[in-house]
Image 1 (cartoon, helix red, strand yellow):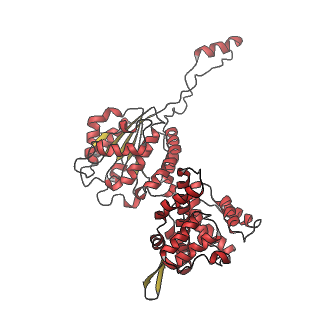
Image 2: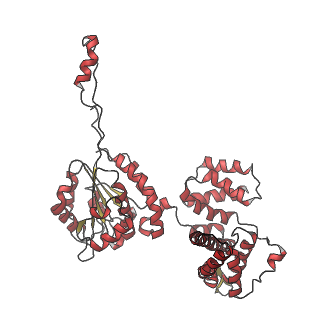
Amino acid sequence: MIERHVGFVAALREAGMPVSLAEGLDAANALMVIDLLDRESLREAYAATLVKRPVHRPGFDVLFDLWFPPVLSSEMSAPEEAEYDPNSSAEQLRRVLQGLLLGDPDSPAFREFVRAVVERFGRVEAGPGRQSWFSYSVLRALSPDTLIARMLNQMLTERGGLPEKMARQQISANIRKFEEAVASDVRRRIAEESGIERIARSALRPPIDRLDFLRVTKAELAQLRREVYPLARRLASRLTIKHKHGHRGRLDFRRTVRASLSTGGVPLTTHLRPKRPHKPELVILCDASDSVSSFSQFTLLLTFALREQFTKVRAFAFVDTVDEITKYFAPGTDVLDAITRMTKEADITRFGRTNYGNVFTRFADRYGDAIGPKTSLLILGDARSNYQPPAVDTLKQLVAKARHAYWLNPEPRPQWDTGDSVATGYGAVIPMYECRNITQLAAFIESTDVGAR
């Protein structure tokens, strides 16, 4: 058990979940006060001591199922076993699945059915004496989504008064549980044949805060929206213009005189006017080219969130030319609708190949007055300019006009300056940070030099 515990904790760390040595010891202590034969109690004891954020829970559950698989002895009673034969036709098994989906997806019968159909349909011969397992072949054979209409009709008939929307939600949730159970059993079988460590590395996507912006899916983009807003507030706070060291505020002459009347001015008690926090202005330049399309969607989410934190935000998108997109992100607008509208209407591309030099030159000519001594300039892009003139001097002029200027690059640092990348050239003019995921964005916001200029 100790060896299994150590391996499980190490797998969580390797998957990007922050588990400290002390938390690992807390989990070990928790195991001493629960029934180790109760698998769900074991799961929750580990979750309570090791999982800090809700976004880490799905990955935790996948790894837990690999390291602590369920007991495989039959859990069905004799009458339930007699209800179907695992060797029945696919259509007969679909009817059994329909009945199980209308019942309790956590029942022993449901779990036994999943194991039976994975054994029947999930095995794929991969060569002489070799086999592999796939959940896709199981789902293709049983097609649970095609059962929704029949199940909905049966549920509404048998349970009169149940709203159709609620019935659909329940059916969809049970189908998802079936799909997850199939995937979990497939992973268990692969782990038994190939080793837990190997399947753990391939079966688990990184947590949302470590997911590469360049590889994010639409579903994950919705999760990122929830992560962006608190970071936008922190970024606004970090970019607030600070008073110079030693400047404690202006003298409040009236309060000083009144406070000193009782002493005749000896000693003189000075009073200062309270400092007024400055809410900065922000200008954002976003690369919207196809090479960084996923990253540009994230940066536009960030732009949308930042609008609520700054007195004034002007956003610009570019490919080989640049256009202002601020109007598409008005308060109350759905961010995904804004992105779609921007893609169709904004004048950001002529030839479809990124040209940073032309973008900086055109921005300086058309929108140069957007940057001033109270402005923070944020550039978001991969610094790849298709071997066109980089216009470094123009960028230098823009940076000199701004109060703060930063560049977030979604490419791994080892790829900077390869091919058509001008990262080092631009980085000599403006501080450039690798920003591939939420964790790196948070690190940039908390870095000591941000806001110090």
